[in-house]
Image (cartoon, rainbow, N blue to C red; front, side, top):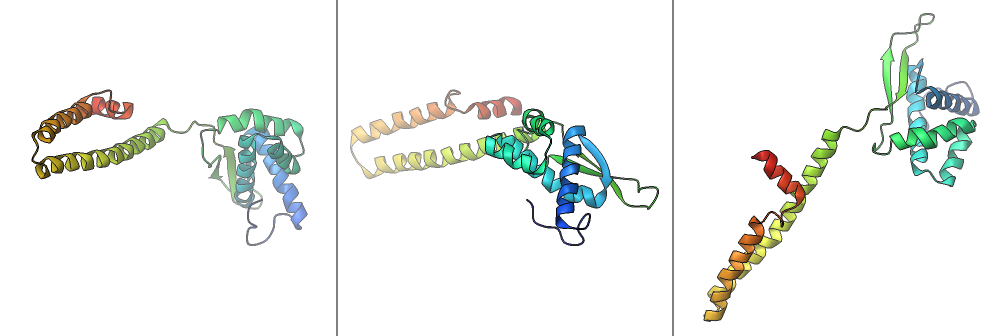
Length: 196
């Protein structure tokens, strides 16, 4: 379980707090969102996200770890078969806490904690792919430039006509490979097409 929070426990005893959090997590997975006090929502968030991470693993041991906290087999089954697959693309941040108006009787700060059901932004995934493609292109360009510089330095050192005759063809072959679209990666081709 997550690191213990500082301050007073929910309920009174540690076991009561565990039961409160287990019941809140069960209600969250059953309904998708719940309204509770802000302190309970903040304490529930790491517990619920840890349980969803177990659900994403999906093996028998993970299911038994979740069953320690949530006793309802129907909710555990729903977590592993419905909730976890929708969170497969998401790397954490499975829940969202939104503050709402205070409770009428005692003015306690209230919040809605809900499962984030929106898909991960495709724009973020595209940006990550583009950054990786530029890093790969830079890594491939650096060794290619070094070999071209070595090839240019080799003919000047040798005075043989055979080596000087082979270097222009090597330079033209490297220029052809650099200009051919088949040598470029698909991400670079898409980038060039969108840039022009």
